[in-house]
Image (cartoon, rainbow, N blue to C red; front, side, top):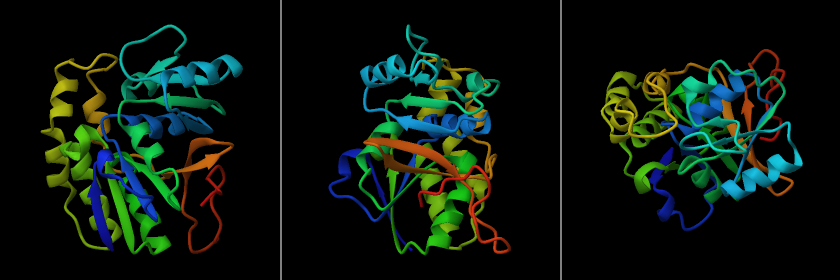
Length: 240
């Protein structure tokens, strides 16, 4: 597999397949939202768009980076979301890097959003689809965020079928600037458990696939079918 690792500013054309990585914290949060029952996540371009969608659909869950704010229901923290009841709900998410990265590759044939918590499931999709060329979008710090790069490199190794010792990649992520800022409480809207939750390898069995639906980029969970049944499991995305 030919893997490229690019920051958001380096994206000049739509790749055939893209894996958008935001470990701390957008796509760890997204995975937790699905684990807590969310049906789908609308990736918004701006906070104003989140509020506009929320105004039209008051039952939707508005989520943002930073501290709590009027009109929003949740913040971008896996620890603060892990006890939420999101059964059947739609979440509208806007973050500084993760959602921006996904929207930057919205025209790709396949868009996966990932963190360590869904690493193996993401790699499996790439293997099963036989993706010969994959662009990994390293969303943090204009492509230099070591937690995102480490996760992207790990998924690339696993997608190519190579053995990979996750420990070294996780250590890099744990030593990243983002991890330090979260641990020190520098980032508002965080919880002391956020770093540990972001570094839980393969916590969830599903991948997360984003695709355009009615002009919005929508993220859904996706479970690869087993060889025995040949069809996706209940609740998985059919937009692959």
